[in-house]
Length: 142
Image (cartoon, rainbow, N blue to C red; front, side, top):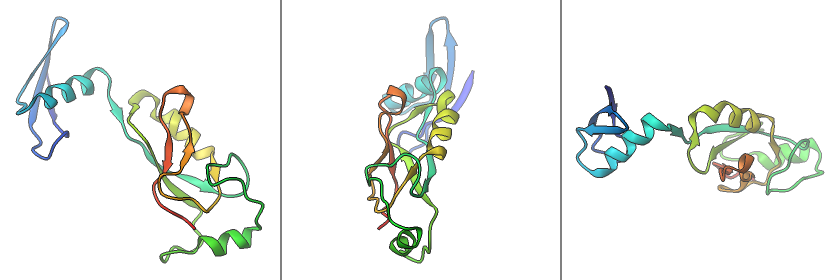
């Protein structure tokens, strides 16, 4: 028997899940979404991944495009909201990734590079390894 706290809605039901043969019996949920959450969390857990991507002129360029600007031009353009010369761009996966593949996705994010300007929601890595998961910018950098 496993105990879980449902994260689908703000109620946070305390769930118990137990395998009985091929069936998963879930108790404690106040709505059907809790049972679906428990089944997915036990059988195929997934997570949305947040990380940072390097900023710079070399490597793969995201939708912001490759840029031949000098390093000084990049630094002066990136100064924004008290963030002087950021070297990394916050990114996140567009949908949940299977938990067993998170390290692989994280490694691919860490080797990718993009150049400003980048807008919130720009795709940095498209359709990662054919999974339909995009890695998108989590903030705008001019």
